[in-house]
Image 1 (cartoon, protein in one colour):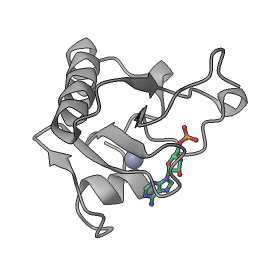
Image 2 (cartoon, rainbow, N blue to C red):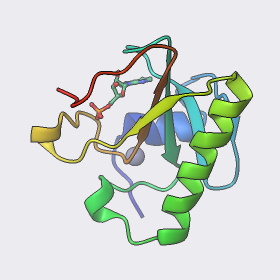
Image 3 (cartoon, rainbow, N blue to C red):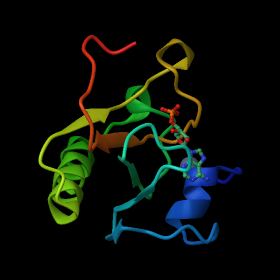
Image 4 (spheres, rainbow, N blue to C red):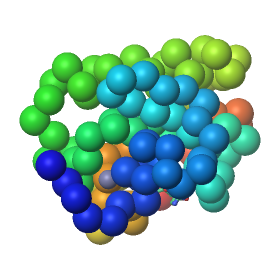
Length: 112
Ligand code: AMP
Ligand code: ZN
């Protein structure tokens, strides 16, 4: 069990006061504080995993993507990109697993 300070653990437990767009037993979704697109939502597990390399739960990973898809549908985002940054070179800055859900504009490919 993770016991240290983690901003996303605080958000998931309601301690940070962040408005949640979605919540169930295992996951929450909320708006990114520094949006990179008109829609920029983060979907995270309530349980702390440092990143994708640390996850040992296939069912949970499937659930997180299902939540991302249903949040997009709820918000009327028909086309979107999901991103998981893993490790410093990828741009990961918060070490609690999260899926970025980005939409509302055209996306470049390849990503930077
Ligand atoms: P990453 O760089 O992939 O680790 O993504 C971390 C994301 O978390 C960034 O897009 C930040 O803008 C976002 N973020 C950091 N702190 C908060 C917060 N307190 N509430 C919402 N989003 C946050
Ligand atoms: Zn955490």
